[in-house]
Image (tube, rainbow, N blue to C red):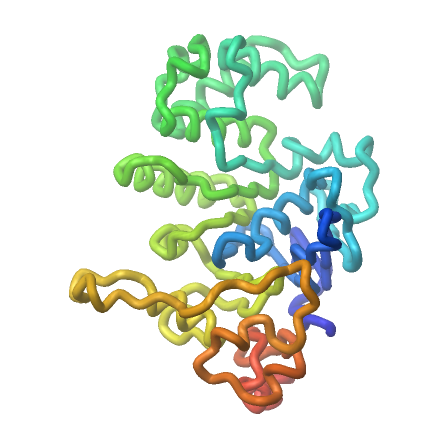
Length: 342
C-alpha cells in the first residue's frame, strides 16, 4: 500500500515517505508504524494525535534516530533539508552523521523534562555543554549571554535559572528551560512529545503562548504529539491522526475540526467534553485498539467503526486525497478521493 505524498522536495523541511517500523518482542514483531507519510514545511506546525499505542512517539523518535535497540526501520525513507540546502537521508544516516544534526538542526523536547537535565549540574553547564558539543571554540560569555536571552524569551529569570540546579525549578520552569535550551543553536525543526503533560492549566497556557510566539519569531518547523485537542487548536496548522500505527487522516486543523473525514477522527472530535453536555452523556469510542503483533486483516479500525462495510474486513484502505490539501484512509471516501485527484 502506498500513501499519497503532496508537494516536492524543495517545498519540504522534513519528508517521511511510506515509513514502517517494527519492534522485536518475545511474541513476535510488533508493527508500531505502518506505511506512514508525513511532510513538514518550513515554519509549519504539525500535531500528531491518536490513542496511546498508536505509534506517535515511535514516529517522532525515528526522525532523530533515537529508537530503542529492539526497533528497526522496515521500509520507507526519511529526508531532511538542512540550512545549507542539502538533503540528509535520516533513515540511512550513521550515528556519526546524525550527531551534528541533533540539537543544531533538529531538536527533540522529551515528555519528561524532569529527567532531561543532569541533577548534579547547574543549568548553565548544560547550556555550555550543548554549545560546545557543536562548537568547541564557543566562548563562555557568548553562550551565557544567549542563554540568558532565551530564558527571558520563555518568561524566566535568566541569571537565576542558569545558576540553579534542576531540583530548584518547578515542572513548568524545567519545561520552559528545556525549550530555551532547544533554541540555543537555532534549529530549523523542533519536535515535542506531549509538551504540556503533568503541568497545571495556567502553566500549559503560558507554554503554548510561548511556543506560538517563538515559532512566529524564529520560523522553525514544529512537530508535536498530544492527546489534547485543545492544545492542537492553539498551536497546530495541520493535524495528523494515527491509529494502530497508521496515519488515517491528514488535514489543516480548522477543516479537520469542522469536518473530520475518517470515522476514527469523527469519534475523537465527538469524545471531546463540552460544557453543555451532561456527564452521563459523554461519548467514548467503543472497543479497543488491535494487537499490533497479530496480523490485521482489512482496516484496523473496522471492528470499532459504526460505518463498517464488508470490504473493510478484507482490504486496508490507502491514504488518498479527499480534498485540496487533505487525505484520509477510508473505503467510504474512495469516491470523494477520485473526484479530488488532480
